[in-house]
Amino acid sequence: MTEAHDIDVLVAGGGPTGSTLAADLLRRGLRVRVVDKAPHAFEGSRAKGVQPRTQEVFEDFGVLREALAEGGPYPPAGLHLGPVTVPWKMQQRNKPTPDVPYPNILLLPQHRTDAVLHRLLGRLGLRIEYGVALDGFAQDTDGVTSTLSTGERVRSTYLVGADGGASAVRTVTGLGFAGDTDDSDKTLIIDCAIDGLSRDRWHMWPKASAGACPLPHSDRFQVMIRLKPGDTPHLDHAALADRFHALTGLKLRDITWVSVFRPNVRLVEHYRKGRVFLAGDAAHVHTPAGAQGLNTGVQDAYNLGWKLGQAIAGAPDSLLDSYEAERLPVAAGVLGRSSELYQSLSEHRVAGLKRGDEERQLSLSYRGGPLAPADAPATRTLRVGDRAPDAPCTAPGTSRLFDIFRGPHFTVLAFGPDAAEALPRLTWPAEGAELRRYAVRGGRGVDSAHLTDGTGRLTDIYGVDGDALILIRPDGYIGGIITSDWAASFATAAKALTPR
Image 1: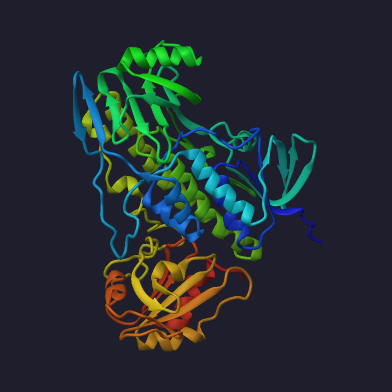
Image 2: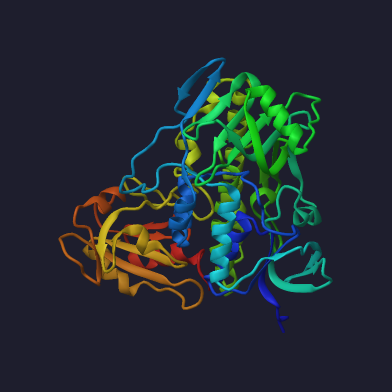
């Protein structure tokens, strides 16, 4: 007899990664708890850049509009070179396109990102349990028994450590966390107001290794001051104000949060150990350059959530192994890029200020992984494992494809008459995430039985020349491209993703 579990998933850590994962699990109807050893939600601005791909994740959860209202665009840089201030464009402002509706990074202090996600969890009926630490756990073939600092023992099917760089979950697993921490390289981060400083620039004083970024919808700045080796700063507010004045001639005041940052560059050896998983900073820590850490963690959670839901419904255990296979190479690549940018900043090179397509995380792909064989069929523009782009289309209540994708389900699009004819005959299990089926047709008007591609842009963006079935995973990546032998080929593509 299988032992009953108190809950399906226990999540340690209530930051952006843990909150994203919990929200995804809750919308799948799973029983979830989130514990966090901190006494309350994070209060600082620390990770303040939300990349375009993460904005798409937030749209799927229905909170992007709220995030956009709380945040704002990144300002251009202003380099203070003695008495002269030189404008500098850190990144190109891109216009939305039919396939990339959110092309630019969003400036959103981390405490506001947390608040957006926490309000979502509240609407889903979950409250993060602050002041509750994970003291230890033991796993067996059926589940995980965790001991909390309250003395409570919790039995769960799975445990996820999203509890930061000093992860207690990772420590108990004994998994290696290879990399470097440079204790001689420290940066002060201060949330404060600054008298007499304009809010239309991200101000930088290269010779002083200092910067001040205006935070939207407030009088706050995030100040960063790179310290010299051996410099141990006084963290009382008056001393911090004196230091900033000596560097810039400006007065800061009303400090609300201070941190001393040491650049960590570390990557865990495995993302999974049995029924225990790691996500976010518990699995990888980055330099702050390029606004990558928070975004990579959110996307870890987005990749893991649907796989946990499917496994609990009866999908093969190999689906859970694909989490590490897909996400670990991404984290390794992001670590390298983040470190490259940080080194440029350390050497006062302007190149370290530049941001481009690589940081937006829209081109990340799982091609060649266990769920995306390199020899799988492809279209002119897409391969299995790629991000499924947005596109214009017409259906009841919507004019775009992302509205069709929104939710915890799989989606299959049928292009061409043969694929459309095969659509109702595709088999899909009743357990786990549902499959929503759409035939794509040309012409005009709204048809409840089809997606109308009135402009031809959907077909063009997806690179389809003939008949094809395209399966989209719940996390918005291509799960299968079928161009012949419809039922059998679709069943093969779905086999690794669905309950038996």
